Length: 117
Length: 107
Image 1: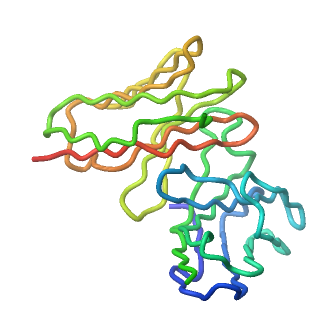
Image 2 (image 1 turned 60 degrees about the vertical axis):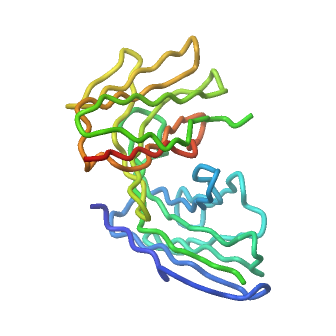
């Protein structure tokens, strides 16, 4: 299995509080991604990074920010958590832009279950 | 309309059955296609890429029909361990995931 860890694995927080989720990889992959997964929806991209300090928005980026100061770490921050951000968050990595060619696999971390009350 | 659509199921089949899932995509410019597998409360993992000519990996066969913009996955001789959610994934500048089709294989 690819070396990807996420922390925390579970978190319950209250509306209006800031929350930071961490993704750590030991594969030295260039690309890192944050997704959220909700019932009735596929995985939806929040933000991604294509290098240290290089990030871009995904399709559901509102209310989220990211930072990547080292190759191995990609942080997702909810500035002021809302109940609509209750979800399962997955981090993923790839050594080139995932999916641009066949067999270019994206490896996922174990996920973080976030509940915003 | 969603960019990638799948029947969420669940598909309940007995062991040994053959089952097929379809997935449709809306962007004709889509370049690459994949099936990922996701076990309950686990992360998704790549099952197989889908090639234009169709491809097979053991009991699994994937097909692509660009003209009709759909992808299929056929599983033969279903095993209990095949029970999972199967995600159709399309690359159009970025990966777009379908919501998944749930398969439950019964003894």
